[in-house]
Image 1 (cartoon, one colour):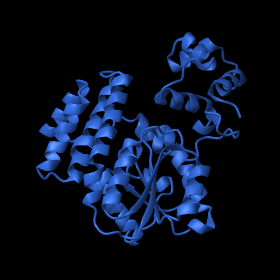
Image 2 (image 1 turned 180 degrees about the vertical axis):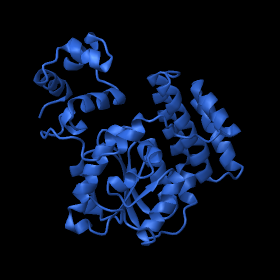
Image 3 (image 1 turned 90 degrees about the vertical axis):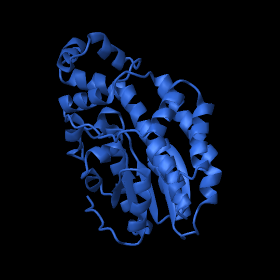
Length: 314
């Protein structure tokens, strides 16, 4: 199967465009197009959408994941990507600001102490996850997107937060309620390498009494389906932080809906694309959507107790 660089050369040639012509249409330098076609550079998310729209093909086709040159099957979610709408971020409380500043200074040990001391004072773990970890990770993502942070700093912040979450895990498990008897799988779809969000969801579901299997990130559909057949969960929680991953979510849901043994399986989605477009979860065929890790616990309960109405399936 073709890759992005091969597919880009083919599309450009089929439309009779030189590299310079394509560069002019996209507002890029000719050398940038040359680098794309030589696989020495890869475009950002917005540029990928512009290329797909220019040639009238789906992202799957452009990325070499499909041999069918058709427009994207899931329409409508691009609109929110191109709009001026930005994710609304709640103001950071003092603890979150201190945690952010301390960790950005490179002092992971001190940042961990801040959180552990707050836990010892009686602060609920759920609040630490939502108001400190989740909020500061969003802020770091914003700073990175605005070129105020380099990728190395962003990676350090994320890895450090995961390590600090691991320090809290014994207390998290110790405070868990009785087992609910419910089983779930939590993961990020193929192409997604952001796993702190789904990890938070898995932790808080486990604290709520679920038997929760956190599968990590960048999982292909075959592996997810295999895990679902083996563990027979009542619910799966799927994370996507980039619009490029929405197609992967939709394909996974279609695959699961096509499995007769998974007819009663509930599917919960979450992540930035779903927060920016409140109706997107319905268009990909999910049963529900969660805006935060804490919200995911409540949404999961509603779904497995049949309190939520199933979204229309495609």
